[in-house]
Length: 88
Image: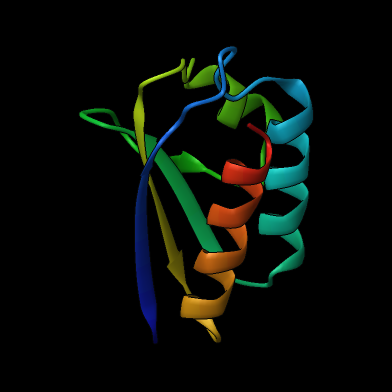
């Protein structure tokens, strides 16, 4: 099974708040892949859960790591990263 990992620094002044968390979780759930997101140094959580994503408490300047396992892992990881970056 293919695995892809992307790491980025969140530049949004309010971090990952409700709207980007919802968009990210919906995209993760719709991808059909197993997706996790983790704040640097923290445990990964299910990316398809809005509450789990918001529960990470990601703030501006934090580094997050998105890991995708499944078909089209590279494309899914790129898409999810773009959602996080577009929220800024």
